Image (cartoon, rainbow, N blue to C red; front, side, top):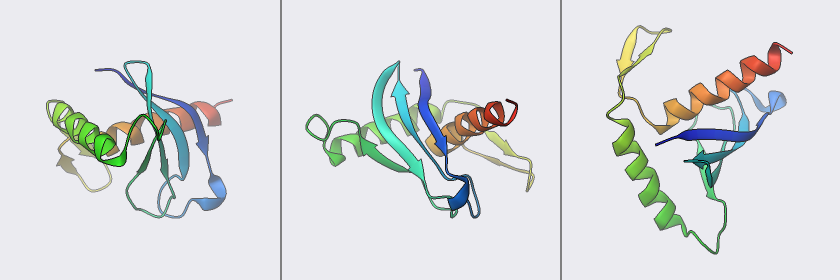
Length: 107
């Protein structure tokens, strides 16, 4: 399963504890949901790309399936506190956003 982000926007003025961002999440190159984080340490928010095609129960079901798939990935090591965590969708998206952010700052 291939996860990627498009249209990543970092909202610096909103960043408090984490990066505030918005992006389009793609699964196997197909738009799945708009994902965002308000930068205050909370979880990501997912909004279906097409409200007519996906209802929120369906997107929650698909997110749960993604979470199950990602559990097969190696555990993620948090360098800040020295702990390992089960790999999940939040971590996958964070890694993609940070990679995009770092590429923005190198320009």
